[in-house]
Image (cartoon, rainbow, N blue to C red; front, side, top):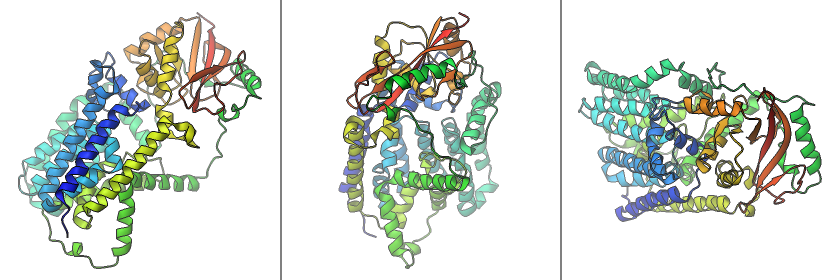
Length: 543
């Protein structure tokens, strides 16, 4: 197999790292990032757990306690990415020394790795610890059995970032059965398991004191199973308003006033027709396969073309000499994909859930396929162009049809303008919002505005769990004579103890202009908007 040009490969690796660092500065904060950043800003930090995830992601975001800027958290993400790639390179250097650089070039130039290099998620710590645990396990399988201890420590820390780190357990077992059966008779694999358990014990204790809420949420979220979650918010749960209620009357007044206004029709969401179970399952499978392919970008097509051309032929790679420890790479490359693939017909699998497979699959591809630096260069250029187009959509959405439905755009665009608009408003006390995404974004861009997530409108979150910070703000809200609720969904909501008096909206235009429209002012700031937020004014019935 022809070796890749080291100079070309190193240049690609350097450019990929540089691109991630540039994007870390330029890319707008997305709502989930703002959520994790907010965890690091709360008075109960450093907590041992949160509603949605274990605590490590909030520890990684702790830089925002010193500097209130996305880069304070993202620079840590970038460093974690660099360290993770370093351990993947060390692993590749042990198993496929002549092809180690090409494996790293494939990995760092993939769309998934570039994104993981600057966006703060629980996957940040997971990917880092997965890479370290694999490296230590390879060394253990090649004779240094004590390395199972450090592999166990890395696994424990990875679980503190995201529970799917447990998938490395079956990977370890498969590798031991294939390449290390004798080590099963030694104490080291079991001591590694004990080390993992000791690391996560404080988090398990926190879970036991909090009704195992994160486990319940993640189990329900991952397997689409309804869970009886315990929320201790002091606010009564919202209900969908009935026809003829003050909430519906207020909404209908606005609709009637705006009926003939050009561009208003697109603001009212129309319910999608319900799909059958089979249709839903096939959609989930297609979304999952597309998500995995999207992580690799152009490499997915290159691999499919290679397999189509050579699938039935005897290849030189079929006769490659056995490498001690390579079984763990095969398992780590394919087990996460297979595991989530089995689940995909039954629940919505997000593209990042199986992303831990990427480091091992890059090594596997470098050994099993004759990929060259020229292929990597072409794929890298394609990915840069795609990322450039994505940037154009984010910065100039008015030139792209369908941008209004772009998920990334919906999760990042307009929140800074909304925060500035709220900051410019006269003080109106505590503001209520319908979702954790909106609360965290408003909290990031308008940190002086007290905000609560009203429970019962969208899924529960850390904000509806009954933490001290939120209970204090909720107590202030309950005693206000007037309440403002901002929601992403135009559906009217009934809030027990309050009665709606007005309903209006705000629209974000492609050029960033925000404009309010109401019964008194039935004018949109632009005919084609990016998104709207809906504002309901309530009067407290028992101030």
